[in-house]
Length: 316
Image 1 (cartoon, one colour):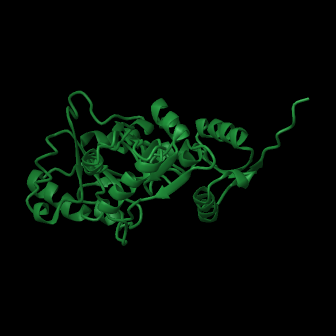
Image 2: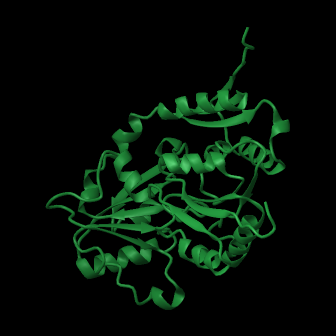
Image 3: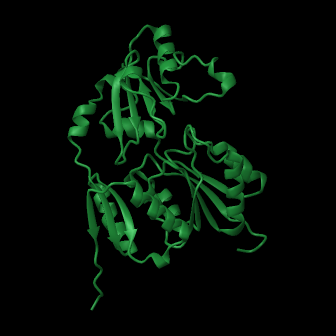
């Protein structure tokens, strides 16, 4: 790139995890990206859609652990835009919903760097949709409110979590750490034992759904550090049948070895059947060292049910 020309930064929503739930624009930008800065919870296969040879940087934050500060992420985005044409900042879900997108946009605009927000499917709507339900329902839940379980310290005691329920559905992002306190507040103010569904990693191989009520959910689950959970509260949650949903699933975890496009096509086909896939590229010389580090990390992290080796025959 020219020393005076800056690239464009796309703040892209990667959705809840299933690549089939990516928007067409998100997938196109991931494939076109010259560099990707991604969050911890992005499905690693989605990163494998990127062309071989580009740098991928993990700027994710892990709950209850020391992590990269937002100011440092902003700096890395600015640096990336100075030397790359298409910069993708890849975030889980929808970047506009508790994705700290405002801080990054402000920092980029302060440096006269062009940027664009590309929305994604947020985990609350994905979770209920996948289990055959909605966030709203006529005469049962006529509104939905998104909130967070991580309020600023000075605001935490002031927030009346029960007031924003309003006889609708309450979706609490990052709601596990303060779950007991929030559920107690809701019951004390409403005296209604609302049904509650807690969702982890929806639409991924590690997805987990736990059902209870405002008074019982804290006893059913214990704090699960390392995986932020989504808490859904409201009358409509009583209609979610978690047990039947998981009985219908027969998901397998595949490791696919082969050429880039052949492996991508096979993986996308398996994802469309509800499975989870990671690619182990045949020709590693094409890949940037950061892409190889990611591949090594995820192949060591996951246990695979089946291994698929694809052979590409030369055309005659």
